[in-house]
Image (tube, rainbow, N blue to C red; front, side, top):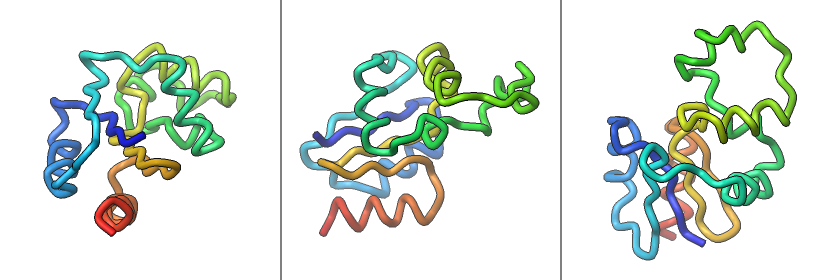
Length: 117
């Protein structure tokens, strides 16, 4: 599978997708207009072994809801991601059996290297 979960309204996601071109065979899924299914989240979890690794602690709602002051479990992270797309750390790039989560320079460079070599 070759897929990128992103947010079309996120400038960072768009910049990264542009930087990763050409993306032959990749499917792009805008998580705002096409919600993540529990099955898709399970696929991501199978590659990361952690819902927390897929969770964005930089999401505005994380602080607004006071979640930063709670001890969240893996189940909490899973349920929150399914409930609200903003909790997914973006972009999530899946290329065959590899997953790249987030927008750090190191992650984007590793994704680019894997995709184009």
